[in-house]
Length: 513
Image 1 (cartoon, helix red, strand yellow):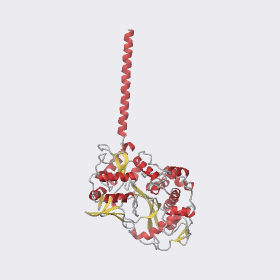
Image 2 (spheres, rainbow, N blue to C red):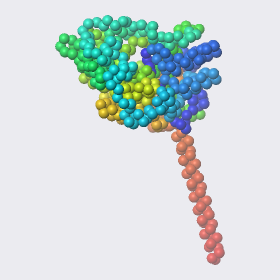
Image 3 (tube, rainbow, N blue to C red):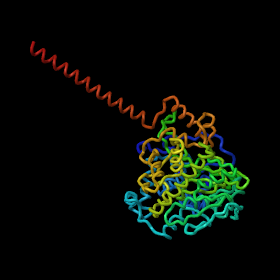
């Protein structure tokens, strides 16, 4: 499943006169607006659609829509504002932040979220309760948290293969949610066992969890994810870890309509507060939210497996399989590639992330959305590790509230999260992070090749302005005009004062004469 999405400048795309050029769509792909134009008049479909994307009840996962966002989408659909639907919501982070914060206080019926965070969270729970809190947000397969276990990886996996039975669900009227198998699906049994083993080994460092060990070869065993990856490397397998970026797919929708089975393009758009050069009237660059994850690609005589790690909209920060088929429009770019000791180090850091987020869930079991947004989004965990590995981060947005990251046992991860640039306070994001998050490179040809119609030309124009130093933020011209008006008013007052003073002196001179 693939994931997983100012105040003064908040205007949606339609209000700003945005018109999407009729560029070519990826094969077998339609816009969300096209589907809704055909189906929204059918009795019950709009309600079923909104219910599904605001809280899906299957492994296709819930979309990240607060009540205010759901209400706004309903208004757009009922008003037949199709251009606006294709750039939903088109809000700045400053507008999105309060809607999430309000939900964070009340939707989970925990009005003391901030107080708990400041105080270090809820009281610690012992034994079985602690393990239950962790297992809700950490998949360990058959390797239970309270049992001593040897994970023997010397033999082929006996887990079942890929199935879509609980991954794809019907929304109605020919629309389904969830994706089928990718070319990696034949490896599912091995990949699932590896993901379970890595999660379970990472949990070894948690209180009240019984340690386990994994045996990869006869020469020794492993008690942590990084030890297991190092052992796999030492037996001749190739281990490559990539920092991969995609356009986030918030719908995972498919529509069997008049033109046959088609993917439904459903990104989640953010107002970057950057002016698109040459736009009249002035309008901001709207960018689709991206998804970031680490991916392990293992090839060798004993194991062929592919697993990923990210913090998802399901509230889980864990290793996962990655064998569902991505829709073509989400694209992909590997921003960094690691092997050897660097691959081991990335694995160590992700294991530390697993423990950090497990403890966060233990302390804040009632937090809405499983902590998604409050504890960060998929970008935060990847950005924090990128910070450690490269000294900088190139991802947007980052939403983790540092107030939650205060457990001294997680000092390394806490420090990395606190170093990240935050997009919670309404400040315009760094241009480098906007382009760094994209699933394409920064050349004109790559930017023009983005899969979403109309976006490529805007990206090229903004990138050129950024490169030549002419980039403008929304409101810059207004601020300059206001400054000029202010200076003009001061100058006028000064001139009037000088004229009045000169006349007064002349009058005094005439009286003396």
